[in-house]
Amino acid sequence: MKKYTIWMILLFVGLQGYAQQGVLSIPPKNWFNLDPVENKVNGVSSEKAYNELLKGKTSKKVLVAVIDSGIDIEHEDLKDVIWTNPGEIPNNGIDDDNNGFIDDVHGWNFIGGKDGRNVGKDSYEVTRYYKILSKKYEGKELKDIDKKDREEFITWQKVKGEFEEAYGKAQMEFEQYGSLARQIERFNKLFEAYLDVEEVTAKTLQEIDSDDAVIDLGKNYMSQILQAVDGEVSLDSVLVLINMDLKELEANATISYDLNFDSREIVGDDPNKLDEKGYGNNDVSGKGTDNFHGTHVAGIIAASRGNDMGIDGVASNVSIMAIRVVPDGDEHDKDVANGIRYAVDNGAQIINMSFGKAYSPNLQYVYEAIEYANSKGVLLVHAAGNSGEDIDEANNFPNDKFGKSGDWSNWIEVGASSWGGDGQFVGSFSNYGDKTVDLFAPGVAIYSTAPNNDYQDAQGTSMASPVTAGVAAMLLSYFPDLKADQLKDILMKSVRKLDGVKVTKPGTFDQEVNFSKLSKSGGIINAYEAVKMAESMKVGKKK
Image (cartoon, rainbow, N blue to C red; front, side, top):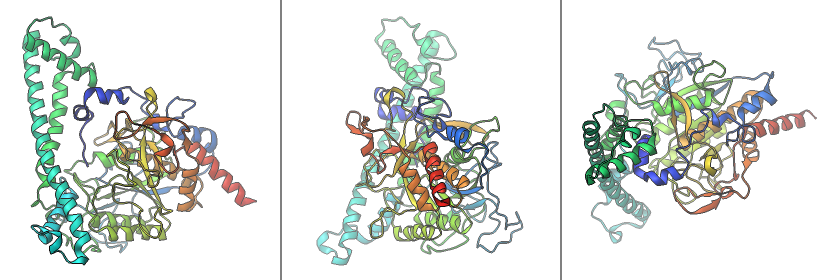
């Protein structure tokens, strides 16, 4: 789960290309809740639904599980919506409700240890899979392999190639952007002295009038960076953010592809015992680790509405169950499956899963958990991923591509749409697929809760998934008799279609495609139309 800041992303994809994708214009902070007609942004019309269709109506509290990196449960805009286990007496060291988890007051942390430590950094699944398979196949050729193992051997060859390429790229990126940071730092010091200023900004750079080639080159280069990021910030500020990202790149170059790194030493479980119960700890915030991602996701769904602070989440009458399984790296299949089962067993009606990976060694165990959720009528909402790929073809696990036909009725796969500024309707990073992705939802420049009572922008299908989960929770709270398959059906049929609208195909700069071809429904989720449809179904039942 890469967390590079927008400043680092600008440097990755190229300043001009990123600006062309509309990321640098600024939408309203709450744009994802707004209406396309009234507010001229591609929001989901949740405010309109509350004001025109749901005002004065009663609702029932809905429990949404957020399986993620941890949540700051003390955040000012989240503390009132965090689930409290009614069967558990806090901090008495006893499993009061006999569910197999001691003191699980607000949820459970599957990547924490009994000694209070928590997993922060972790390796990628391709690294772990490479290590497992290399013991069996390193140095062998296809002719040496038994027929029953040939499919796995072919997988091994693919994993080996991807691991070696990714490892080399990680080393290169760390060196390349370390060099870039040093270059910016040198120009910053040069211009501070040259201009006799404490901070170098785009404005101060314009004061430079020199025939010196180095000075002129530095002026143009630094001006380009500052203008692309924000004309008001200084090079000092850019350096702070780039150096933060360099720490991520350093971890990517070391831990992410380290064959000897073992996060389970902290957890203390038996990695081979998939159905193990009770491992982990009750620290759902993941103290000492980065819980920005989970905190941001939780706020999109359920940040307290109408409290005159921060933001309003999509859903108004909801509790958030915090389940921590996602490290700074790739999640383990064991934790994902057990996280789903925990959520189901403890009453969650909707589960948001803003994570994914390209390999899943224990995929069957995860599929069994998805089937279990389906048998209990729980809706699963999952982010489609941020690789700009067609996941009809590429892998993004977990998914619902199993069983006789796949496409499970309790599973919604979500791509990321944009607010429509400068004609941009889709996140350039978003995965897509008219057989696999069900619908799109706002996922660009989403302003939500951040740790320590902060609020920040973030983007990704990780943000689009909780928007969808929030709309589903809104529906379920006002129409509590709806089943998971009915929720999905309503959300799919009530999307706002952008018929005939051509967009830049995600993952490209110049290929055009009809927006309707990027997902199964061909549209963007719309709470207003979904509520209208749910109301019509309710009226029909009364008749």
